[in-house]
Image 1 (cartoon, rainbow, N blue to C red):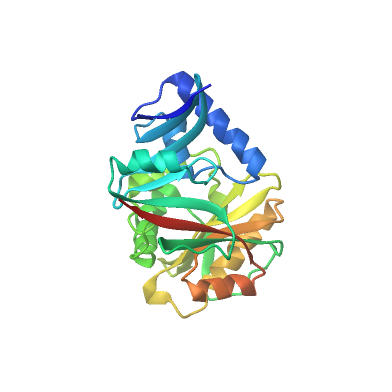
Image 2: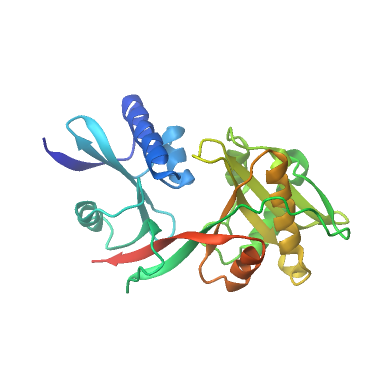
Length: 278
């Protein structure tokens, strides 16, 4: 039976259900999320996108999304690579990035433009030890604008997290997994100086609490607030009965990697971005 890739910008109801079923099945078999949550969200919420679906007969057997914001980027369900799909996409985009998930540390490529470490720790309960800052949970109606300003300042040069707006934030805090008790703000007076947003992955093989977004305002760096925010997040994860923590960090961020290692995190895998040019 022939297998081919087809391009579409909209998905029908049956296609959406079949693709979500494919992603869920891959989640289970891989023991991790099959595709970035932002790409899954397009399918889940029936939003337009740039989709490639691989059919075997009438059954979807593969799925990929092309993100056209800034430099185009591609991720295929499962995080792998497909030469046929790469060739098809190159006919539309002369240059694009391809995300490879779950690669080995010794993998090297001349085309690599970015690497992300996925790290885990079983040392979840850390305790709070900084009385100089107030720590409380995020309140959407009160804190959204100030948190966005703090977060975007901290990630001013980050390709994904430095341009959040109210709509971006609203989409995430209305997701079923959102728990405001796990979104912690560190304050000096009325100012948000750092934050740690955690996310519980309930359906992982082992329930895992992710350090989803952690940041310190540039004006308050060098005070140990990053470590304080991390410990607050880990304590919050532990308080919800979760004993494994995870996070992603750019491989070039040596200071953050060192801090995470000091708190018990170890690199489990590397995700890499390859620049494809034709």
